[in-house]
Every structure is written in structure tokens, then in C-alpha cells.
Amino acid sequence: MAYRAGELRIDDPEAGELRVAGDGYAAAGEVVTLLVSPDVHLLLGMSEEEVTRAAQIERRFREALRQLYAGGEWRPPHADPAARSARQEVEREAGRLLGGERAARLRRLSWRVRGGDALLDEDVADVLHLTAEQRRLLATVAEDNEREYARVLAEAGAVRGRGAQRSGDSSGLQGRARDADDAGSARLLELLTPEQRERFTQLQGDAG
Image (tube, rainbow, N blue to C red; front, side):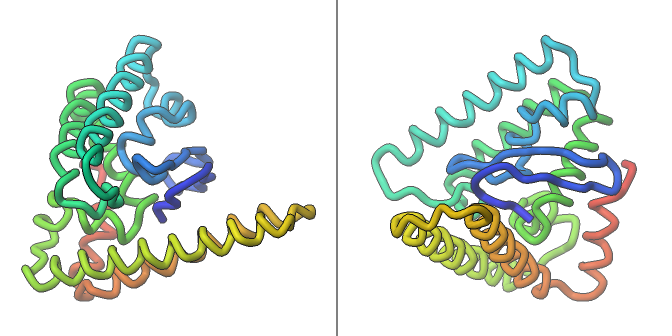
């Protein structure tokens, strides 16, 4: 589950309860958002210097995206091939910052949180030996998911605009956003063969 905006609480089987936040630059669960989560800092035993460097990595990523979209239409970075180099640079920098073992742990956590969205990552697609047709369909479904998610957010905004701020309204709207994310992830995972799905599950939990 990517959960594009707001705080996401994760009950992860390996990491326990974590809190991460997503925004317009990256969804909760992207490596760059995990890098700046205080709970992830504790999980990985990051030093103060490493936390400072992680924040610098995030700022460079944000600046790269600002430049990328300055003259054109914004697209969800995780589904936009034009943003791939910026996202890959984050992973390279995270590897240099954390070292192999902790960086691999961070990637696995990202794949678990993001679910089907992780299939858009080139390294995951390569390991799963996704066909050209599967990759094309994944990109198409990911775009459809983003439109559906935008529709849910627009409806939520309309409800807020009518003054629906009673107790429980906010959590209900957040629940609808998460439901949309879960449904989108399921649509992406359905494009895998049973063998690929099993391998992806292994990737999400592998120790190496």
C-alpha cells in the first residue's frame, strides 16, 4: 500500500509498528520517505549524522522533481519514467549511507509497504522476469490507479468543502483513501503469474 498523502501507520511483520508519511513528491513507503521516518531511524539504528544525511538526500530528491516538473504537467513520480533516474539516485545514496545490509532491509520494507506499486521498480521487474507486455500493462494500470485515487481525494475535498467536519469524518475519508490504494495494489498484483507472485512475496521478506 503506497498511501500517497498523509501519515501511514504500518504493522509490519519484521519491523513492528512504524509511522511514515507520503506527499506529492513520494508515497509513504518509497525509500525516500522511509529514510526520513523517525521510526525507521530507530529500526535501522541510524546515527545523528546518518539522519542528517538522510534529510539531505530527501531535499535533493525534492529539488530534482521540482526541476523535472517545472515546465510541464506533474505526474506521479513512482509511475513516471522521467522520474526514474531521481528515484534510482535516492536508492544509490541510501546504499552508500546505510551499507548493504541495512539498505537491503530498507528496500524490503519499501516493497512490503507499497505492495503492487513496487512492481514498477526496474529492479523488481527484472528479478521477476516481467514480460514487455506485463510492464506495459502495469504502467497502464498504475495510471488508472492514480486517476481513481485523485477522484477519491477530490470527493473528500468536496465533502470537506460542505463543512463535514464531524467527529469521525476525517478517519472515514482516510479509510477511503487507503481502500483505494489497496484496490489499486491488488489490480497490479493480478497481472503477475502465480510463480511471479510467490517470488515477489519472497523478495518482500528475503534476508538477503
